[in-house]
Image (tube, rainbow, N blue to C red; front, side, top):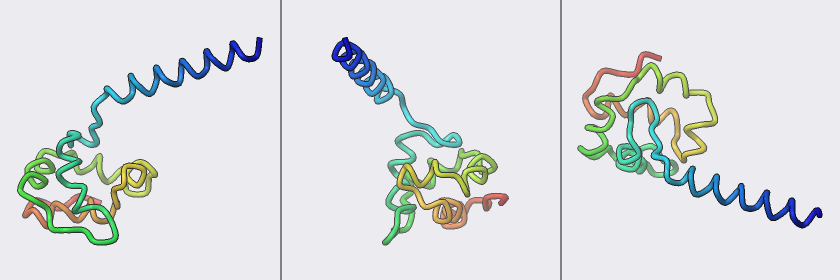
Length: 99
């Protein structure tokens, strides 16, 4: 009987992974494509200057929202250094994040 429960749990885990994988990621009004464009600029140890695509992506970002993630595990779990992320607006000649 325990083996049957294990199969059900495994099936549920696979379904969650498939459904979760189909969901687009968006953080503070920055789309998954925007996050991807900015990732090299917000990843340690050797961040690069932001590309025009990255700057375009963060031009519509909710900076107050981004500030709320400054000390959270969410951005690091996505491979994003929060300090580098908060520095992007200045590097893109945009108003700085208000935090």
